[in-house]
Structure formats: C-alpha cells, structure tokens
Image 1 (spheres, rainbow, N blue to C red):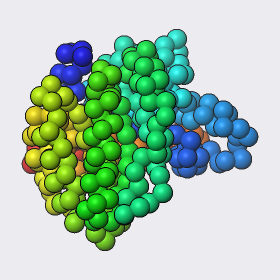
Image 2: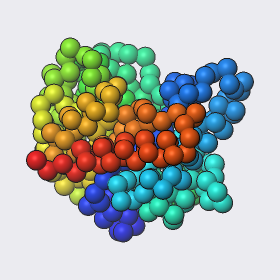
Image 3: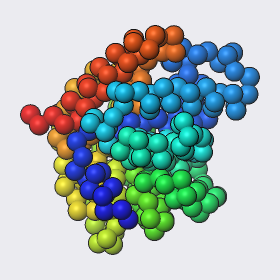
Image 4: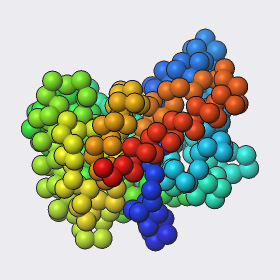
Length: 297
C-alpha cells in the first residue's frame, strides 16, 4: 500500500466528505438540493444530475485538503469524470484528497434487530475496478436498530469478513455498522457493538488496517479503545440524521473521531443558489465540520 496515503489518512487533520448516495438515496438527496423527482425521467438522467451536484462540490475552491482528508463516492461517480480526469484521480491528483468507494449493495430485511448487508456477488470485480480507478479505500454499511446480542454479532462478523477481503485486495476497508440514533436501545447497542468490534479487531493479522465509521455515541469518548487500537487507521463519525449543528456539537465531545457526514455536509446547499451563495454556504459548512473534527477540548 502507498505509505504516503496511509500517513495522510492516519495523521491528516480534517474530515471525510461522504458523497456516496446511490440508487435508493439519490432522489432524496436531489430533492434536498432543490431538484424534484419530476425533473428526470430515467435512472441515468438522475445519476447525471447528481454527478453534476457532486462536481459542483468537489471542484469548489472551498473543497480542499486543508480541511478534507478523503471523500467517499459510489460506483457511478467513480466511473464518471471531473473535467478530463476520473473522479478518484481528480480528488487525489488535483486536491490531495483520498478517494473511497461505497461497495455495499444496500441492506437486507431486518432480523434480530439488525439489517445485514445484501450479498455482493461481483465483489472481486468491484475491488479490481476500484484498484483500476485508483481508489484508496472502501466503505460498507449495515444497520442496527436494537440491542440484540446475536444480531449485532452477526453484523460485526459480516463486516470483518468483508473487510479482510477488501484489505487482501490492497484497499483500506471502512466498517460502518450504523446504530439507529432514534433507537431507545441505542446506548445498550453501543456497548454490545464495541465489545464485538474489539474482540474481532484483536484477531486480525498484525499488518491489517481498517477504518471504522460509527454513529455518534451517547457517552462522549465511548469509542476511545477503538481510536487507540493498533489495527484501526481512523474512526469516523456519521451524522445519522442529526442536523449539522447537533452532529458537530456531539462530535466535538468525542476526541479522536473525525466526521464523515453526508446530509449534514450538504444540508444548506441548493441548485438554485448563485455561485457566491453556494461557495459561502459550503465554506461555512466545511469549516464547522472541520472544527468539530479537530476539537481538542
């Protein structure tokens, strides 16, 4: 693996921009951006429009490595270009921002209080393409609704199994076992999740590195053992439905976690804004999230 990129990810100051909305979440993202569903007729048109939205963000003079370490994109974005370069090459070559690829294919039906990832039948092809497009790492999401021991263990086992395959393909895997922020059992689920994550991380080969993306915990600094774990390159925080101001406040209380926000990053941006308004709002959002990600007190 590229030592320069590993060093950038491990010690860089900033956050990860999550720009990986895929088929199911794209209409909602576009609607929030001010583009209703009747604007496009086909899925291809929809993805062209959302790529234009992402290009507007990525090419902005506000979107720089001063505040942003990496960006998560989805498969369609990876295969599209920003200017003359494919998106991942643009991110690294032009911005010095590490590109990550969302590789999961969505969630299975809930069982035992969790939703595992759907099968990824063409995983080897996806990982090979990720390398061909110069992707640095991947991201894979599952979902936890209840503090069910069996269900959460299944989530962690599936995440770790996939992470090993990703790392063997010379990519850095990001585990994302999201816990529902509205669950009345959220705190109990966090205790169970941390226990199984630490157990499985301890079993990994010494040379294996992973990243972990988690819902902001109820108790500040609850995931310190994960942040300090030698197999963990970085621990990321997802906004999970919190408004940016609330997510930033919670993140600042969790020292060593950095943001990997999606909706909270883009919540004030709209298609109808002038370039000046867009740049002003994006600059404010980036600076707020950056400040929460590097908070020391």
